[in-house]
Structure formats: C-alpha cells, structure tokens
Image 1 (cartoon, rainbow, N blue to C red):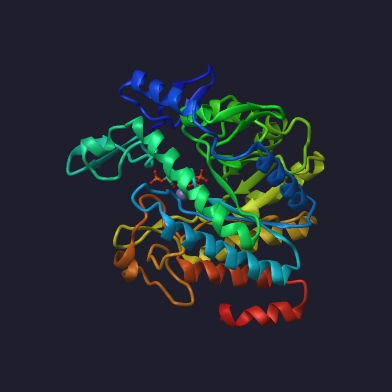
Image 2: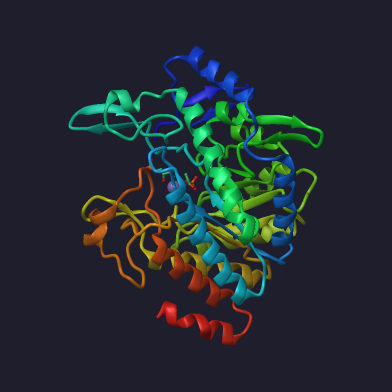
Length: 403
Ligand SMILES: O=C[C@H](O)[C@H](O)COP(=O)(O)O
Ligand SMILES: C=C(OP(=O)(O)O)C(=O)O
Ligand SMILES: [Mn+2]
C-alpha cells in the first residue's frame, strides 16, 4: 500500500497527489480562495441541526451518489438522475418509518479518490493511479495520469453548476444537502472561509474523512477539527474503541449533537462482530453522534471478468447487521451511505431486475467503485422501508418490491 504523504500544515497528510509543479498548485489555490464560496455557512448550520435530530432518533439520514463524480458526466442529466433517485428513496423510507429523512448527496465536490496503491501497472508500464478528476484523468496515459492543478478550478466550476441545478430541483421537493470526502487539502483550504459564526469549509455542507485518512495525528482530522461544518468519519473493521473515542474528543469536543457522524463500513461478514463494542462504548461515553451504515466499501469483490463489483445481497446483509446491532443496544441506526446513480448501469450484481456477473461489461461506467443502479437503489429503499417500518401494514406495503 502506497500512501503519498505531504506535510501541509505540520501534521502528515496521507493520500495527497504528487503535484509536479507546486507553484502552479499555489497559484490555483490562491485563485480559488478569492472566488465565491460554494455553499453558505447558515446552510451548514441547518444541516447540523437536522443531523442532531437524527442523533436523537427523530430522523434518518440518506447519503448517496457517485463513488467519483467526473467532469465528463457532470451535468443536468446525471445530477437530476441522482437527485430523483435519492428523493424517491427518501420518500419511500420516510413514509414507512414515519420519520423525516435528511437527504444528502455525495455530489458537487466528490471528485477526489484515495487509492490502495499509488501506482498502476499495465503491460509493464507503471503510471500514477487515477485519484479522481480533481487530480488527474482516468485514461492510462502519462498525460492523463499526471496531476494537474487546473483540475481544482474545473471541479470548482462543475460543482458550482451542480449546486445551482440542485437549488432549482429542491425548490418544490424540500431541502437537499451536499457532501464529499475532504481529501485534497489544497482544495478544501482554498474554499474555507472565516464567517461571523466561525470558520467553515464552504466546498460542501458536510465533509467526511475517509477510512485511509482518519489518523488521529493526521492533517485531515486536524483540518476537520478546525471547521464548524457537520463532519463525518468512516470507521472500517480495524477501528478500535479508542480510535472512536479519541475522534470524538478531537472533532466534537463540545459534544454538539449533529456535529459528528460515524459511517460504519465493516463489511457484511464483520459488522455483527466489530460494530457492537464501538457503538456501546461511544454510547457509554455520553457522546451524541449519528451512526450510519456504508454497506458498499467493506463488500467490494472482483468478478470473474475482473470488474470490481458488489453483491446486492451483501449490501443488504450489512445494513441488516447494522440495524440488528443498534437495536440490540437500544441505540438509533441513523441511516445509510450508498454509492449509487440514477442511470441503468451494470456495476453491482443482484437486484429485482437482476444484474448477473456476465452482465457487468454491458454498462460498466464508474471510474472508481461500482454503484447501485436506479433499480438496485430502489430495492435497497424498499428493504430499508421494511426494516424501519413502524407498522406491519407499512412493511406489507413494501414487501412486493423485495420478493
Ligand atoms: O472509493 C473508495 C476508494 O477510493 C476505493 O475503494 C479504492 O479503490 P482501490 O482499492 O481500487 O484503490
Ligand atoms: C473512499 C471511500 O470510502 P472509504 O474511505 O470508506 O474506503 C469512498 O467513500 O468512496
Ligand atoms: Mn468508493
């Protein structure tokens, strides 16, 4: 595993690109820091209040979108596809659970990827790994794979366009918030603003720290500790209770409900063993965090054709395990975090309109991880509706879609 490490503020920053021209990077960062923020601090506060309701068990959180947004695909069609998918899912779940559902896109900024390996080798040629359109391009050429700081400006513009469209889409349909992994620190710092209410990272409403960058003494945790936004941290199967408690101390020292979300991504096989102790110790500490389940990243497998994929059955089983753990401890299973699209892609296997392993090449379009397509996303929504249903009638009403 290669972790490029760059000291940005003193604390080591994992998973940073190796920018070939630091002066060009600085010039772009300076340019972005003089441009308008992408979101408003008041809206980050409003999302924090809504997440506080999730933490109290009075609402649910649905977070979803691409693994990696791309500049080529960003635009009205993909944005409305993702928006409508999340809106439909939220409506189905809300109706059954009789709880409001907070809708949070992995969108308008989800352009940077941490990678298991810093390089990729094909036919004896080694090039830097694709790290998301914020950094480099997906084609296996030296030109595309060389990190280019102008991409920071391009994803800023694309995110601004997406936010404008989301604003129009949610006039009628209610509030919709944006989130992405806070990975490339030059981008995040350039869009951080001092406001009368304090310092906010205004590239998105909620930012999360990934499984590969959640080191307690690392630059990502330090960055998140310095902004007022609601923040989230992914917790994978190697997370210890000490990690979780120390993250709470670093990121939520004032124990502010809605400030901190833990995104459990244990894998279907591990979740029932690894999650109970974490949830129990966090609850015993008195911290009021939101817990949600990412049933994608612990369930990635390779298909016989060599495609990275996920089985819908594993996704559903991890969600089931997550709910079982919370229900046995009397804590609130706050919702889910999914990689999905509104398109009919063939990236994950299973579902009511079944995608078989041999179907994967038909429409495999992701540049990073496999996403649920529209039908699979709705399958998950109906399963969630049944799991959260407050009455047998609500559960029966949804069972047709899950048979
Ligand atoms: O989206 C998450 C990570 O970037 C991704 O799972 C890493 O994938 P890799 O193991 O192919 O680098
Ligand atoms: C990189 C991701 O996940 P994780 O940090 O959980 O591996 C992701 O959400 O795309
Ligand atoms: Mn991913």
